[in-house]
Image (tube, rainbow, N blue to C red; front, side, top):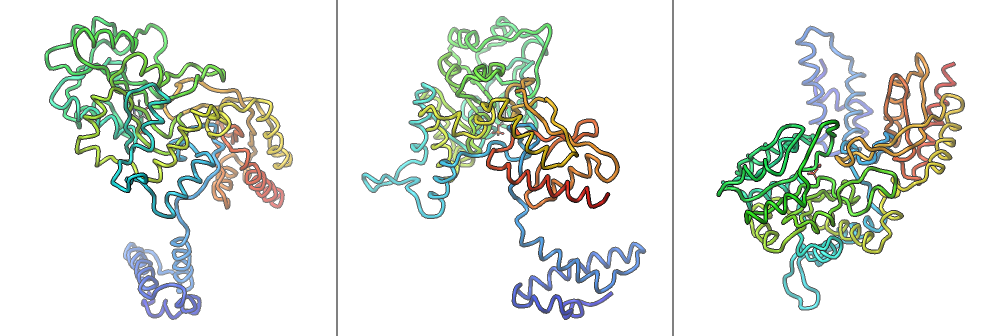
Length: 453
Ligand SMILES: *Cc1c(COP(=O)(O)O)cnc(C)c1O
């Protein structure tokens, strides 16, 4: 096995001496040689000097490329958590850049020149939009719910319907969050049916709240019964306790206008009298990652003052982006400015036209078929929008798996989904501005396919 110096003195690497610090070169070579040592110890033959140099060069090249990159989401899931959830509006991005490239008045009052509070930049907008008395924004909704339960229900009891003690994915389980907060979860009812009397009977002198949790990613069908938020508020009032509402996605617009099932709206929750309503910034709100809490001032203030609030605080960049996103709703321009709502609102005929362009780029390898786009992000479980899909499925080297891989490894990765050996690409979840990227990638793939024949 060659030594570090031998590898380092290879012409291809010595040429890079000016480009990379010496210590970095040596460290990457050492790691490569260590792997070689292990592989030899496992009985494999030693790689040639040439192979070792080539893999060091690869490693150096990889170091320079950010691993977190832009991709095109053609998966047909609008709010795809693995693909970063909501893309942001142009105006949001511009403000986030402006606030981040220099200093900002994050916690500074320009009028008086004195210390300010970061949440003023969104609280007024949230109150205006939802009708709530007060609002608080933290890192994400999981953090918001944890903060709410810790600040209000530690060592006390919170009553939740058994059908709502759910896991929403990514390890977020309501019973676990309760335990972490120090609150005691009292589950009532059965998996499919919970009635008002179940809540009433569970209330003791240690109960502080009744909690509703959006079922997010599953739907109960058949013989089911849940207590409405209005009923919960009524029961809570009679017993001098409060209602906490984890809406999950949170939505400001009426989804039925777009042919979707109704998704509970934040405004309804506030109007019904929930003491606190929790929801995400980057699901149907369509903004940056955030946990938003709106409700009664008395309780919002308790959360604000709790030490955990600092631990789950939101940063200036996302705060700036969220403020602009909220403003889109107040100006009634959400459906044209906020990407997730633009996707939801796009008429089917526009999608069909774009699917046709993609199909052409593939030169006979694909066909357009009708399909469905799901909203995702824990909203509207089971609901979908009609769409047109580009379906690619051949055999051998042009298998759905092979083409899907080529598209993933392209300059800008294009992510589709595979269903029964057919690769499906959905234009509805792709921003129209990204069509050029997709068409180029598809042409490349089709070109490669032809060359092989
Ligand atoms: C998504 C979701 C959460 C967690 O929100 P994050 O912003 O991802 O932390 C909590 N509760 C429900 C019901 C959800 O759907």
